[in-house]
Image 1 (spheres, chains in turn blue, cyan):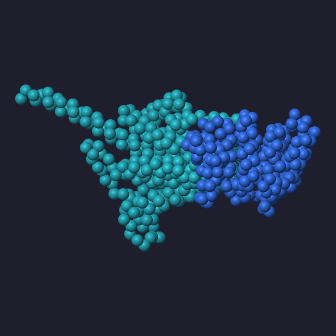
Image 2 (tube, each protein chain N blue to C red; image 1 turned 60 degrees about the vertical axis):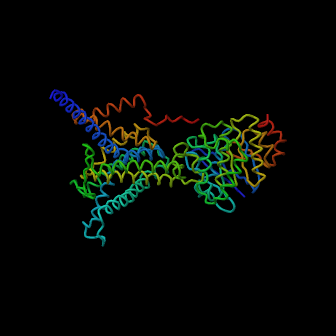
Image 3 (cartoon, helix red, strand yellow; image 1 turned 120 degrees about the horizontal axis):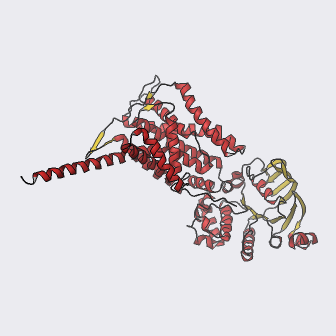
Length: 239
Length: 328
């Protein structure tokens, strides 16, 4: 279980989160909704313990994951030791590496060869396009393929908790559906998912629960199907 | 009798063209050796730049430190100090050990520099300009630290490999020259393999493309940076020992000019690219040696760098460099 309690963070002198608290339980798929600048990306970067300039400074609060305190952990250990991964906004794939190298480099800290092989088969089964293009430089992929690679790469790092930042951004409606179907499949086979999404329709259809962030505070939370019916949410996010 | 005149002419012509070819080959060999030194130093600039986007201006002085460490290691192994090793080593063994120990110790100096000077600045998110200035200051520190510690007097590097000169049909080549060229070619293939095939090498390439995503792969960025400094510094040390074997005079400022020139070589080749460091290094070696072959040697640098300046104005990113696309 991931527990965030009264988290305050700031970038420079500007406080970006004013004491947010939320939990994600093992096996859940949780959505984090909110307008631009609400603090969604900040929340994910804080959880990952990314160093500045991307990550903010935590001034107060705790992040507890499976009983361990994450605040003092460096980002690479959040991934390698605690098993939480991030698919960042804008994908951030390594364009100068091949698709295969991108997947391979994600196994940097892993020693379990047999499991790595299994994971690779799994990624290629989920995203057959990546198998077709495995020897291509990653910057030659289309936007949708890059998003698949970014997700495959997170999976290859061995994590079973995946945070996703705006995964549907820049994708066609058809690809968005496809992507969320894959997320659902991953979730149903044991991956816990926390997804930040602008497309509230989509997120609320697939997630179990959701939180709504507004200017650094959580203003609403609940089961996804309830939030989808909430008149305020409808007005603000579902149009 | 009648054919003697023209045949003598032909002999003379043949001889002249042979002399020309011999001189050409001789200069090519000299250029390859000279370029090797540039290439071995340029590597360090290019590796660190690729990973940190930092021009490590202390790197030329790391080359100097390498030569000095090599000097002390070699003398120690030869039994020149009070504290001796209880064995009589054969000259090739002394040479090999000197190179390996010097590479290891110099790598330690490079890593220390990273730890003490660059890492704290990185932690505080200092702008790159400040880090570059720090690198410049570190270089001056190394030069003047050496001066303070060891004095201004020059030192002569011991002869580790008995000099031998081979006459390849009129072209003279020393064993050191052959060694330098072969070592540099081997280093090229070694580094290419490291960067292409190992996970650390892949991480080095990944950092140069997208630094933010690297820790998300479970990769400790600092470890990759330390590895980069180890590679760069140890290759500069190899260059330092080889240089001192070919030109056995050591002085504290020996790394300054050659370091600047190697930096230029790295840029000419396309900074951030390993093959760029080699191509740039050899290109600079060839330009310098051939300019000196045809013009007074006082004009060497003037003409050589004018040529390179013209080259850069046509290809500002060097041979292999690509302009970095600004990511949105």
